[in-house]
Image (cartoon, rainbow, N blue to C red; front, top):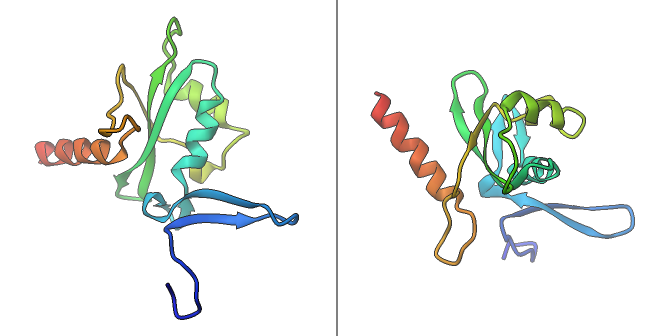
Length: 136
């Protein structure tokens, strides 16, 4: 609890003009891309609208210029042909701002999951950190 009596949950959200509360993402998942706050969940929800995408996880990768850049890891629906980063960017053009646009796309047969079956961003961050160490 804060001194003002608020409970900090780590959720980021907003209240619309009718008083409805919308949870946007978690503060720990927020990316800082070129000075803008970018919420992976917003990007994921936009990518889920693509007819070939079954599952998606978006994480922030280190970017020397922007600080972080969003990368999407996707699993395609059965019998879907492959998709390219350009196709995803074209699909997202009217759904996301330029600062939210994914800079990389990786297609996976089985994205990492937690013990309870949820998609695991932590495992992806660990994998990407391992790749950076191996490159040095």
